[in-house]
Image 1 (spheres, rainbow, N blue to C red):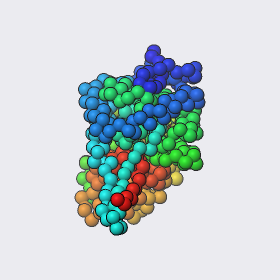
Image 2 (image 1 turned 120 degrees about the horizontal axis):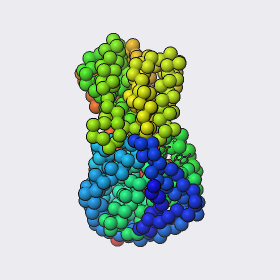
Image 3 (image 1 turned 90 degrees about the horizontal axis):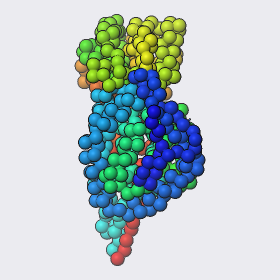
Image 4 (image 1 turned 45 degrees about the vertical axis):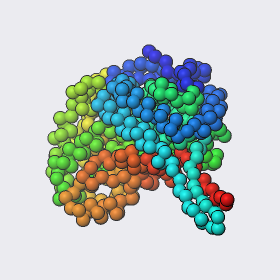
Length: 478
Ligand code: NAD
């Protein structure tokens, strides 16, 4: 059993609240550690440290900030396997998925290394007699980065590198379910030469989050998590006058037109639906066969789902690992059981995997789901694919657009005309055409529409730079 405390002013410190969260190894179901849950006064002192550091760091030269980021990137590359193992053990995702997460996070670090270009302003000579005008981008101050359990390294890396190169100090609040990856990242930033106090980790639960939102010393809040929490955070932070971006949950559809390559579409449904045990905000959770393809497509997915190998997250032969907690696994399994009782057809039932130790659930495929069922309405966040059959494209796109989430969606087709219509019609932030998980690269930005994002600016990339910096214009007459 290990203890995870906080990371304040460049070093790990013990928690003082005497409140702890349990940390599990999902593959075994055993508790492996405890994490300190910060109190208001611990949040308070972390904010004071960050405020003092922000005042110094904002004046560090761009090349000094980028030099830290370049060294951090090297350390991340060197330690990628070690970090992936930490993620895999505490989160339960397969080692290869965890490694992929680290590599995607590294792309955001590389983007941040381009800060001198990203922060460049504009200059207009002679906008009046002897008058010039130019624009600058400057730091925001102290920013809170509050992250979810499902990507304990990648999502923090969506936020922290851009926040730091823009000259801010950061208070990072990782998920209490898998806090060790966050501590690893903070230690490597210090090793890379980041001055003490510029990045602090406050571990905790909703109490720490509420203290950060209420604190007048926090200037901006970048949040990723479930929709109800994202909405509440957006409301609380904006009432307090803070800049806020809050990314929420998802219900991503994979629409399959009659002219699609069904084998490709079935492969995509398997990897996008069951990858990371369905615990990805870009996971496909609804398969939407259009017209006459439904029976054949469901058969193809069924064949593949039955062959998925379930196992320990560190076992290289496993294709599907456990879910993050027992409580979450039971909730997911509950949706599958309820679907049957409301008239859907469970074609593949993964509940036999619940007999093993660890928080396992095998792949589940539920056919003949309708839009009124909870299986369709709610974000389940597990290895469950729901099939909703549509008679034509118009019925299918109406369903996608009526859904309260708008993170990602994919279309499988061989028609360019249909693809173009989908791209135009879908009220969704990230689309894939014959690509099931369309996560944009680091030089684009990431974000959904509707209930999947509260705020204006998307995460990482150019929007991330805008979020973590403030614009200023200057007019001069000499
Ligand atoms: P969560 O909402 O339970 O927790 C996210 C963060 O909020 C954690 O740090 C947690 O400690 C904190 N938190 C939880 N309840 C809170 C409360 N009542 N008040 C204040 N803070 C609270 O989410 P999770 O289970 O850790 O992560 C999975 C969710 O995140 C899914 O809904 C998933 O779709 C979403 N997600 C979205 C994206 C995206 O980019 N849109 C990316 C990854 C995950």
